[in-house]
Length: 339
Image (cartoon, rainbow, N blue to C red; front, side):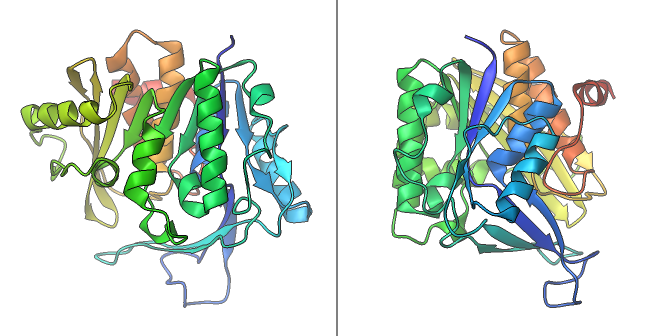
């Protein structure tokens, strides 16, 4: 078995206004491709990993342009299915001062929305893969997309792949009638690695979060409280090998603190706190964290601390990169770890 990683999700076209303008201001929109699982795929490709991204895009020029973009970064898209009505989109308004960012989704009846079991030849896709990455977003889009996701994770488990799942709870997407907690809890039962922030873990588990309120890089973290919290989470997902928690405190629109914890076999690890000011673009920061951890786990599988440190350094760097993709190399991330 190779070190190939497969990701599955909906690639999106992101629209935003120049500068810090609100969506109702101005007449020009800038566009770029993104989407959580595609972001992970691009990061892994740039880190030098063998990566295949699986999705469904329209059989038209927009779908082709999207695939061209992913191929440009070295992502294999051989098993992307063509069909459906259109590419999903979202509109992003940057935060400014004390004003929060805003996201407006337009994914109804997209090509991925109508994905369904049987569309993707998972046994062929997973034939030479070591790890499968998915997220809760695919289960929030539609019932058929959720069914396709569960078909994928079941096949991956049957074939012996490591299953990596980012909880990725998006409140505004759960509109087709499914219960987010029940669906995410079921999805995580197939997972060997689980990623999420405090709020996402709370939705998936029903266990109240431990607050993270660090105002600078020197803040104290209550490791005992987090240790007890992780032990309760572990009870719900006994098959899971590693729980990874990314924590962010948004002090202002351009000033964040960021850190991460990892729980493995009853042992809790922490990494440094980054004090990030200014934040250039926060989109895709969590995806950068996940991708870096996946890469590190393949390269240094016995060194959990190094994997966690590498993940946080990559995530910190993404705050300085505009767009959804983390365009940072392994060398740059390793240099960041030493600062």
